[in-house]
Figure 1 (cartoon, one colour):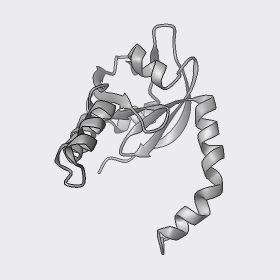
Figure 2 (cartoon, rainbow, N blue to C red):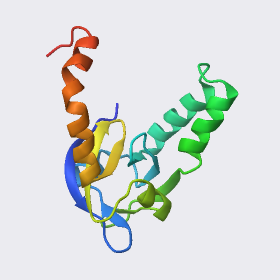
Figure 3 (cartoon, rainbow, N blue to C red):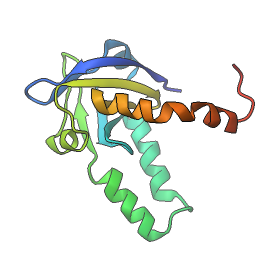
Length: 147
């Protein structure tokens, strides 16, 4: 199972490209990733197999009625784009996704296990600050974890 983890700072260049950290790149199979909007104001970056699993789950979910499925298709599938990782380890971010995630220059690249997230540094810090107080109650709701 793929385990994309880690947190790094990155810099968006003038052409809208960002270098993926070498440690994350080395865990990716191949040189193509799929980008889409995240739930929060970030970009989700999937390896192709992870994207296929995500999209398949969305298309086959019995929990969604047609109206909800249609919305989620527009939310995640419509803006998705496959991109190549160039020889320098960079990916070109489409303008629409950069605007959605409010990416300018300073970014955070983090692996969440099965996907990579790309955040504007201020949005990332605000997200963590807002959610940190909930950590203990979330962990407790999971029951007995092995740590």
